[in-house]
Image: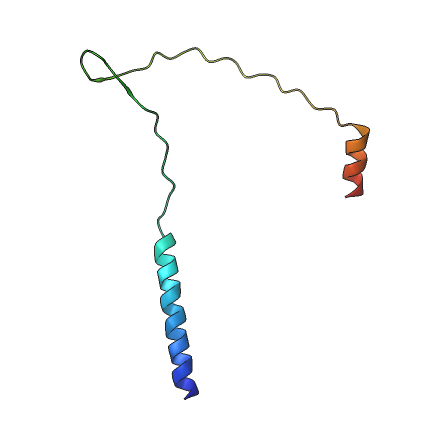
Length: 75
């Protein structure tokens, strides 16, 4: 009797695991695509005029206050 119950439980667990693994396998997030603009006259896709990008800003180090330092030391 115990053998039948054990077999039944293991069968159920196995099927549930298979179901879970089947759903998660090979799933990737969808990549966002930028919308293309169409030409008003021809209806074809047009290339956007690339604007000159600004240079990256220089990072400024933040000075920690005494209160922040003591709070960090306490934890």
